[in-house]
Length: 314
Image (cartoon, rainbow, N blue to C red; front, side, top):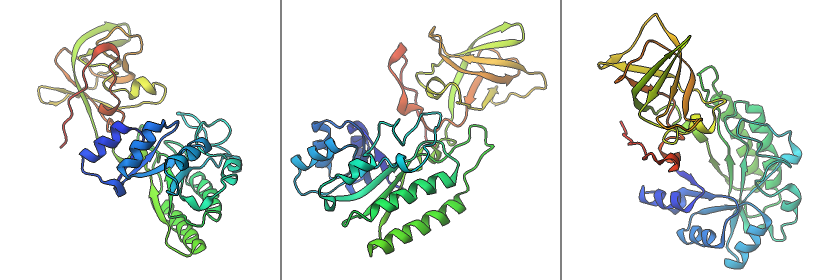
């Protein structure tokens, strides 16, 4: 497993973590000249996002090959996810099919990148999009890789699973086809997304206040959603199962109540969940949110003045 980044800060962090240029993909949008030069100087694989970006690249680095991000939305029915649409006329990302056709020297392109979307479970949608990318591959004589981006679905409550066995069969078949088409082995690069570690992490905080209201308990904790931001960024779909620890053991009870857990600011959206069903809580209890392995420490915000949460790796 290598690494995908879209900012210079994360590029530097990747190097500090021990990754090297052949292990890093840099794909962003609206690249400044400074960012483009920095990514190039690191020697990492860059995928550009527009004809203007390609023109700028060729002026800065004449004759040096590069990858491009492709928007194949004209040939598929774009799939809308909770984070938006990433293909077609409503997407800001990538070269359109017309723009790809107008690239004067396709021999300079060594990779095609595709961002399908995020939290997708439908294998047929992935494969239909990939097939369109394979069709484009025929027009690029020096192609070295296909970069299949987008996020595999990670169920919020465990009721869905992506069929990876079927996915593997379908993708292997496509990669064999494109390698045969090009007369050489074409490299496959996959970006799995949040599924890599989303359900591996926990966000832990302490109960600092409890307010009992008719039919509900309101539980305040010593943390804010700017420290664990998925509930803030995706309040309509974020579902992080809650466990409570008291005196070192899980708190279990047959008597439970609808529970809202809120942060210790006065910001109106500082709500971790308003869907929990928990026993009577008290000050000092430990609250544990699961499925917190992404959008956690890396998305901490300075808004509201809370520090980045401490992180422990077990």
